[in-house]
Image 1 (cartoon, one colour):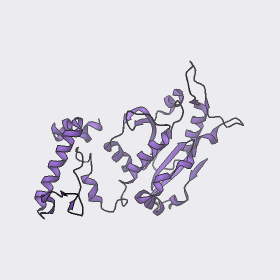
Image 2: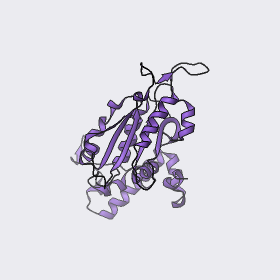
Image 3: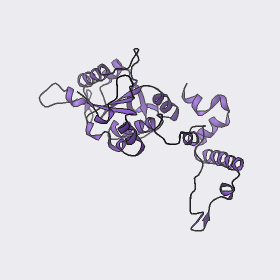
Image 4: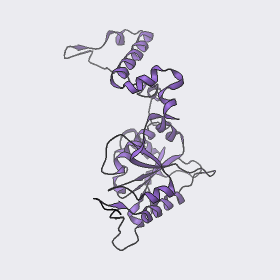
Length: 261
């Protein structure tokens, strides 16, 4: 019932960071995660991707996984018995040592917004199990039993949890050791210091009459660092006043501190 990707095999003594995705469409994975840095890391065995086909746990000859909602309304709802069986198989396949289980994540618009602090926390652990909903959602009773961590990518609705799962996994995988060639580059990215990232420039030095800021070609590292900080603060203040307000309150209430409460 669990499809273990052939590129994710690793010795039992070294278990890579593992993502196990419960979905009606396992063929959507690894999708874009097979490319670029994430794909190279998958091929090396730095992380492992497994899929669980929810439809494989349907109990009738038609492989039905959904039904009409009680109380009426449009659309269909994923059945609790089918999802429960899939979840049980996914957890039974969890071989994390010392009684530690992979965290169970349910991607839903009503979840807590995903932020970089949550991504760092998940990437620092052994991996995660992701439950992808479809249609009008999942019967509430199975969510009450399994109590997943509910996560949202933002105030919008997708056709299913799979695109959101790909985003979540990409955000986590790029933080794993060895995935990004220059780890120090991660420290300058948006949200890492409670600020958005500053602008970036490369050759040619003048393009369409627009020149690269002089300070960036001055060779004065202290001035360059100061410019980067100033630009990050300006962009954050203009574009994300919510982040700026947290940052301006000082180290005790940075974005990371607020999001971890």
